[in-house]
Length: 187
Image (cartoon, rainbow, N blue to C red):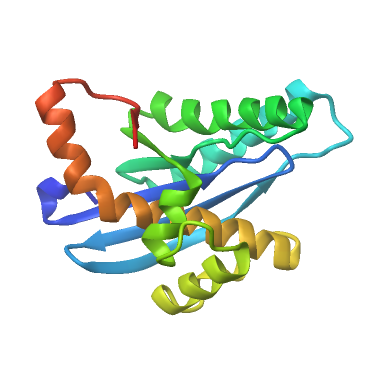
């Protein structure tokens, strides 16, 4: 669904992780939001790192092929105390940025606090609050397609990324036009 065909836009939100990468797709028509799909892509922690990154790549590629979003948004990585974990998360995030960019989609990045503030109204909301608000905004959307509550939370986080992008995309498009630079944009 492209805007040329109307005001509708289909957005994929991605919550990157090496163990589970959440993804969620919403369609926006003006102020209306509709849930399209959501789930997780899991990598096999018994496999070498390179193969796990390939699993994430192939899974995201299949989601893009199936649902054909118009735009993508990815949650920015926060730095934690464990450098090794941060590096692995950064690698997974690299895949999450690469796959939609290679598919020709504009890719935006959003800080976790902005995503939470956009969806819940508080930048330090926890995962349960995000999931509850996603259930209000998109009833039935957080079933996930993986291992229960963790998968549902990752899918909800990804839907929150997509919703944040929908809320901020008009402003982002003005900034892009003013800067004359397409591609990955940061908030």
